[in-house]
Length: 211
Image 1 (cartoon, helix red, strand yellow):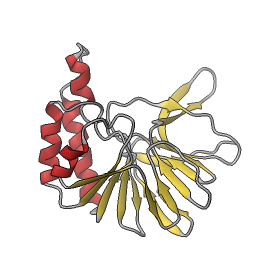
Image 2: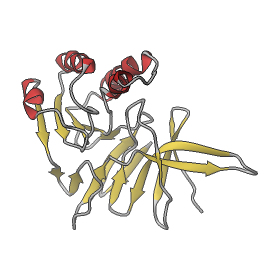
Image 3: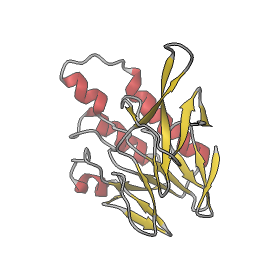
Image 4: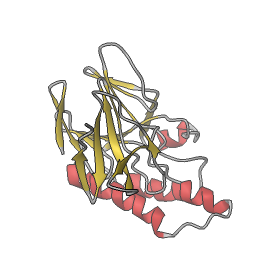
């Protein structure tokens, strides 16, 4: 789905990524690499294909848009380094795009390890009139793109039918991206007046009619 914000063009992708067409930038939030291995270490049974699926989705989205830069809006890696770091390093070695990480609360791996991979780690970015952060933020004169929340919405049908879907959640001067990672969960948000919700369903992004 293509949308316009402040005269800039963006594409909302069903993966949860957002492509800034005007700037040729790909924004991705909350991949949480390493989370599967972290949970397995603590005895939680998780299918093997979840790890490979995250890297496949990353590769597919980059090949699809061919961005000049990839900007991760925080929580790229879930916790400390584990076996998935080696897979991430292999993925980066094959990636010719410039990568920037806006550090999130889960990004506890020392910056020096990212620097070795030629990845810049910053607290935030300001590009034109847009503020890129991990936590949803407000700054006068800026439109904020962020993550952290893993936004979801519940759609209710007749009777007791309901469906919980990931979404892009837009407020007047802010958009929270859907979590990109396969094993991240969803936090249900309740839209207020003038909010806009773009739900992800069946590999499509759909604008939800709220009223």
